Length: 87
Image (tube, rainbow, N blue to C red; front, side):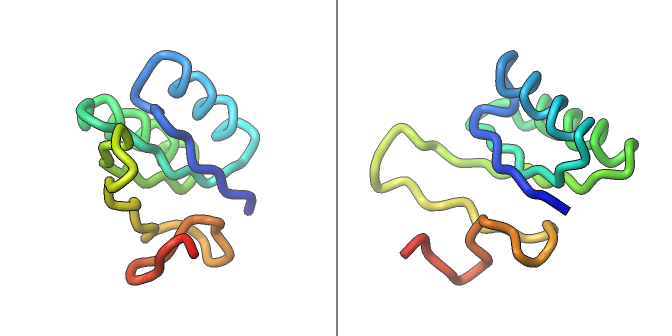
């Protein structure tokens, strides 16, 4: 199953991109900064269609922001697993 991380998935454009990828069969990591409810609703839409979706909260406005950790997505996901970094 292909996997994608959508930054800003709780926004209008990010949400549209996420919905398109979900319709194409992608498991999705959905990033949000402050709109947890919007992200959760999008994840529920994906799950209702049989797709995996996980929300990740992260403030990406600074270089020192913590990296969201993947859990709940298929193995082989390009996202870092808990305890792993990007390097």
